[in-house]
Image 1 (cartoon, one colour):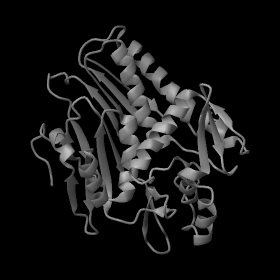
Image 2 (tube, one colour; image 1 turned 180 degrees about the horizontal axis):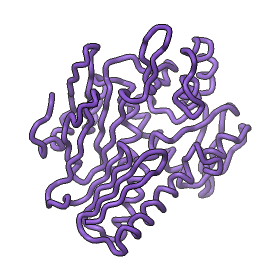
Image 3 (spheres, one colour; image 1 turned 45 degrees about the vertical axis):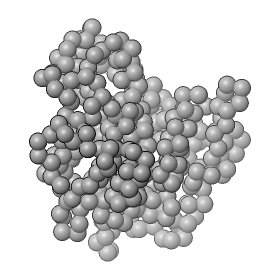
Image 4 (cartoon, helix red, strand yellow; image 1 turned 180 degrees about the vertical axis):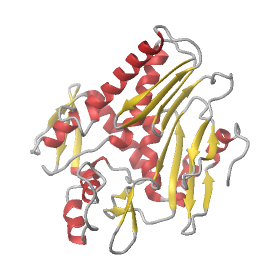
Length: 322
């Protein structure tokens, strides 16, 4: 077995190959970090030289040239978002910053309605446009203040790209985990399907065991990243609803999605978290998507629900709290 761990995109990753890998750990680390760097070079908001950072710094409404790779990411992300009513929005970054969940730090107080309204003026799918002309791609802002943040799909992109590179090398089995984004192939070192845990939102270990069965899987949660208003004691999640400009205000704390690519699951899980468990599961059943949601009431009692398409992925585990 070959296993490596490291840091990328501000989080941790683990890559496990049950058998051997030509060149061992060193070669596996090299190909992994090359894949992750390719993603970061396109979408990192912390690297001023990344494509998206240069677009964000472009103070103009003129078309800005981008790579077809970045264009494909934005196009697919928006396609998935439109399937769930547009609630996953790459332009929501300024609202995230306003609420203090971006790189600018947490605010001293909850933003006013006026502040929220002012920022919402340049947030939305209609505030930027992706164009393709003669094999080239461009992004155009409707307002110079528009900034895009693709970090919600970054981990999934990294897992997909590394999976593609390992597939090209005919690696028969692996598990790639970048924070909450998982890609698997084949079986684990014991010759059984890879098993992945959905975290208990109360911090008590694993809530449910899932076997992705060769697909991609990711989870969006609101139970870790939040702040409490000092004046009112109210808890505010980092998950911002672009329709209101405010954090979500319901009992859904976690949504997991399984699909062929983790780009797809990453694009869907945050938006489905915004919608809440009831709408998320209804949508999953209507569209035949594998969706699993956990709600936690004010007394800390958790309960799970899932779509019909998610059931096969739960059959590999023994005890699942429901």
